[in-house]
Amino acid sequence: MSLETVKTHLARYDKTGAVIEFETSTATVELAAAALGIEPARIAKSLSFLREGHALIVVAAGDVRVDNKKFKDTFAVKAKMLTSEQVAALTGHIVGGVCPFALPDSAELYFDISMRRFTTMFPACGTPHTAIELTLAELENITQNRDWVDVCKLPDATPEHASN
Image 1: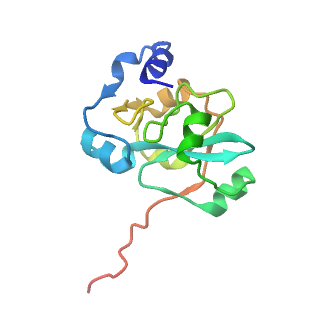
Image 2 (image 1 turned 90 degrees about the vertical axis):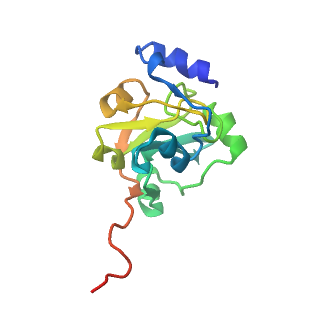
């Protein structure tokens, strides 16, 4: 799906004008955070997995990693990321632009609790050159979110070697 498809979806919620378009790439958490001038944790990254032939998308804070045990306990499948080809076919978006909007009905969408640390988050908008700032309530309202889950682990805040 294109940026226009996402904008059409967002128009239903009067959010089309909030889409930010960049000349530089925002395809990774680091690139998006740099383009927006924010900390990487505030990027709402959409992680795409395979479940029973469909996309299972977990939207999480940009600084977390999937915890494989939590994922399997929650979804009863091993965390298997989609290939680039599968991402486009099963989400309607390309890698670097996967977002929680305008997804096919077959896609399952979940929000990881790692995002609850922030008032607003910045997901992509269908291309690797876009973003939008949304509150968590707005994000829930304009997506087909199934539930909040706890399948990620926060980065370790303690240094490996403490100095005396």
